[in-house]
Amino acid sequence: MTNLTTSEATHVDASTLPVLNHLDFLCRIVVSSEATGGAFSLVEERGRIGCVTPRHLHEREAETFIVLDGALEGWFEGSRTLVEAGSLIHLPPRREHAFRIASETAHFYNLVTPGGFEAFIRATSTPAAQPFDGALPLPGPVPPEAVGRLQEVLTPLGCTITGPPPFGRGEDH
Image 1 (cartoon, one colour):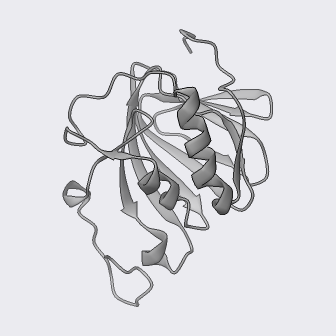
Image 2 (tube, one colour):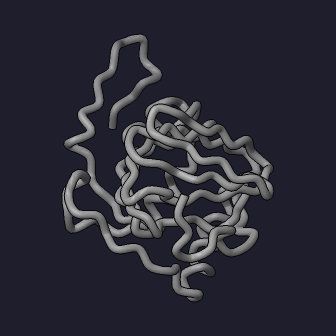
């Protein structure tokens, strides 16, 4: 495992990282919290329109989404913000939020501070059958029985699912 807490320069070759399917987003954990002494984690993600998260809140983590290609729509306590390539949105802890892919496809980083939330991604993902830059999974709704499993993993991390996604099906940006 790469350790960024040393005084040496560190290089991460993302192409060598495992690719995970997390709720129909392709993900790779570029920098884990173990590598940063818990300071942060960095997850790279790709998805297609229809990928969405439920409303939720983190007790301790802030999330900063940095959009490289396409667009995300962030929902933050009732307000919506379109976040296009070249921009970012920062979501503080203890505030209800959600996001969705708002373009045909999107590619982005999620910087999570402090680190540790990537444990949720590891625990609730499956290995992807395709490379990170390959075909994207077709998104579908999270089955009701899976929501309980997601919350089971989230509870020890101080995260709570507060409701269904705040976006209508088929909305365009």
